[in-house]
Image 1 (cartoon, rainbow, N blue to C red):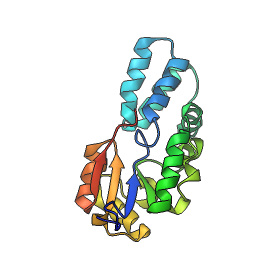
Image 2 (cartoon, rainbow, N blue to C red; image 1 turned 120 degrees about the horizontal axis):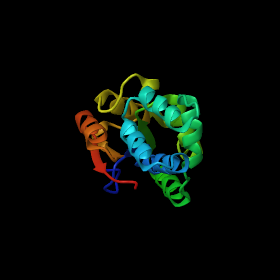
Image 3 (cartoon, one colour; image 1 turned 90 degrees about the vertical axis):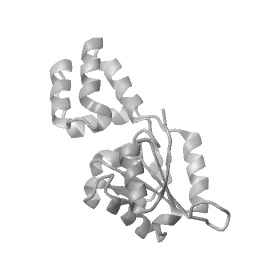
Length: 187
């Protein structure tokens, strides 16, 4: 796994709750739009940290708030609550100057790319170094997604590190593909 200095030769990052505080943004959105704690609790459960059934969540949002919500409107609204982290961006730029870096994320392309732009991560990660499941055709934990990213970076999986917050998706898939895994919590 060494780059000549003892570290990985490439670093792949999960997006939600690793590089960005997605759940914190959702919580802020719930608090700003739903005065009822019961409604917030219901929608939080339906969201499931981004893993819930999106159609059911969006219908419940519309019912509870009186505001029509589809995936596009949800993405736009969520991006208003995401906060860029200048120190993280500077650290990532420094890291990217030393080893290839990439984002490997589950989700829809338009949604994930909008979140990347809203948090200024597009200043670090070039479009061809962003691997989103809906665009690639494999979702984490499928090891093919991780291997695909490593191949595009020109680094063997065993010489790369995946950084993410969910062992069951980020860690399991990375290890199955031969990458090392570091579990972190953004929040």
